[in-house]
Length: 356
Image (cartoon, rainbow, N blue to C red; front, side, top):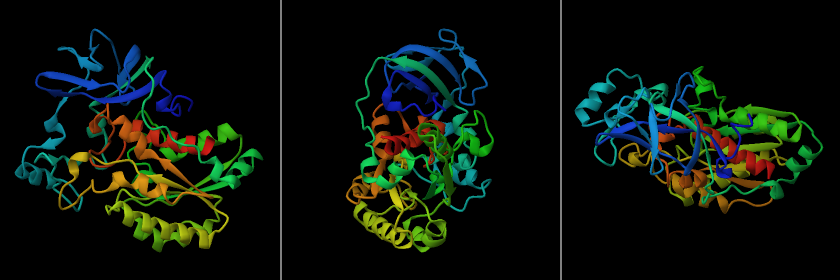
């Protein structure tokens, strides 16, 4: 738990940073988030295999580079993207999903096989633990305790706190390895958050997760009574946005209506608004637009915050990550689901908001 929940922005020892080993122009390399000072451990994503510096890889210009005879599995971009529509349509025939093919902005097509099978992506990712002296220069989550006095008081008194998480598939926990019974078995991020808060405050947190995959803010408003208010929560985490795909101003209006409905049904509940993690920037394409306006949502939600309402700016941290890292290093399904590493960072952001 201590390693999983050590904030990525703290630097120092970086735990299991994921890197996709994709060969391009004869070189297979992946970028570090920080300048590495000392490599402590290189392992497969599932943690079952350990690799060696020198024999399997080396560090060069902030990148981990594979040796010619490395034992680390490597991929080509063709493992993740089809070169044309005909190949994508042929691949689509073996899938049971009701959409696709999904074109990218560079006229390729996403391999959709990884939906529900993150191992098809994470099997080409490795996890590197290392030390760094470099300082974080990106977004740092702000504490929400000042605007959440009821939660703060219950935590101080170590009283039972009922937390309702209401969101989409990312709040369900896709694509954390533990959700699929796969190694390394990292729990879904809501459980990481619950355990961290309980350990820090020495109180009991009752987590009720009513999230449903594929849903957006309109659906959330229709079902807020039975999925939130009927549970009489002390704290509500709202995690919609990935599937809204509307401009930030419209998303803010929808969220404001959702906030009003929560407050009408359970007026004592405090709220944390989660600015969704971001999808693959290559899928800003018709007709599905997996990437639409999601990157506007943190600023849209920030204007709704005040007494009883805090912001968890997950996408702000991800934007900082992606100044150094690629999306392929952070995803489990190539479209919009975080892998263990990015999901863990989502838990760290919420943990920081609720711990100060």
